[in-house]
Structures are given as C-alpha cells and as structure tokens.
Length: 256
Image 1: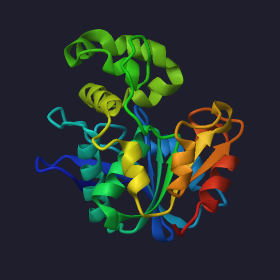
Image 2: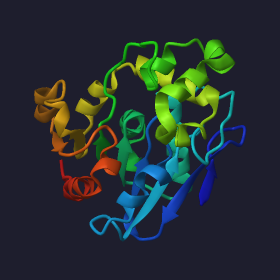
Image 3: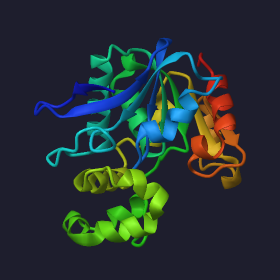
C-alpha cells in the first residue's frame, strides 16, 4: 500500500501498487467501490499484467482518508487524484476508470492533461442524472438532503445496495458518499460528455452490450471515441466478464 498527501489539511489518498514496466496504468473505481476489490483480477490478467499498476482509492472511499470538510465535487476529486499521481511520479498514464471514476477521469484529463496519455472508460457517467428516491446508486443517494442521509437515509441505501455492493460502500465516509453522489448527478459545466468530446488523446469507452447503442454514440464516434460493447456483463464489466474486459483494455488504441 502507498499513499500521498493530497490536501492542505494532510488528507491522504492510498493505493495498492503492482510493480512493472512504464508507462503506468491507473485504475479508478466508481461510487461506493474500492479499486483493489474491483480491479485486482483485471490488473493481474495475463493480457494486462507486467505494467506498473496503481489501484487507487479516491478520497473518501476504500483505504483512503475520509475527510468531512472536503467538497467531493468531480473537480475536487480530479485535483486530489492528480496530486496523488504527481506524488507517485506518474505522468502520461493510461487511466482505466469505472462509472463515477470515469467521470472523474474525464475531468482529470481535461484539467491535468500532462498526467493522462490514454483514457479507457468503463460504463462511465457522461451526463447529469435526475435524483430518484429509492435507489442505491447516485440518483437514489442524491435524492436525500445531506442531513437526512446522515440521520438514517444511508441505512435505506444500504438495504437497497445489497450485501455485495455494501461490502465496499460501507468503507466510504457518509459525507463522501452523499456529496460524491450529489455532484455526480449534477455533473460538470461543460458536461463530462462535452469534455470527453474535446479531449485530444486516445479514448475508449467500454459499455455492456446488453444495454444497446449508447446515447450519443454517433457523436462520440465522430470525435474519435472508440465504443466497445462487451458481452455477458452488466455495469461492473471488469467483474462480470474479466476476459472480455482485459481484451478490450489491451486492444484500446494508443494513438488518436
């Protein structure tokens, strides 16, 4: 386990690092997750092993610190992650990022372009989401006020999430979970989709084949984003179809 201070108050992001060749490959988890649990199998897959790999937990999640005075906007997450990568000596990395982590990765690549040479998004959130009470995901969490979530709403989210997701979600700070979900539903200005379209690096977006053609697919393809439908999986592509995931990441373009 490695760590780096990423805020003026001394809060640390932590990651599990696997030794290997440069350039590094950095894995970033989604909401309520942790990268070692979600990406260990992928990082050690024969098609992906041998590269220096950082399985990073975002601030507020997993083994990283959980400050209660951090904003947890997508921009703040991106800047904190950028600080951790800089401290680790990681520049021009291949960033593999799932769900909310994909949103943060897009913001990171836009704000800190020297850090990212290739972007592989894994069923990432590209657009704002309408809060919807009753769900375990970002839309359900964001439907609570922060006060109501901290006062007991998190228990309803726990029950909706189920034991598998809650196993990693319970590691998150409650403020981190609520604020991250709320800011994910609000998105960024310009939107994550618009930022992605404007990036000048190789970009690949892995999506579940069963979901059909993604929204804005033609526009993404026209901007050079390679869309790769992965069979036999749901939202957690790397867990549901590890071989298909590894093949797609290994085959992702290295030149735009």
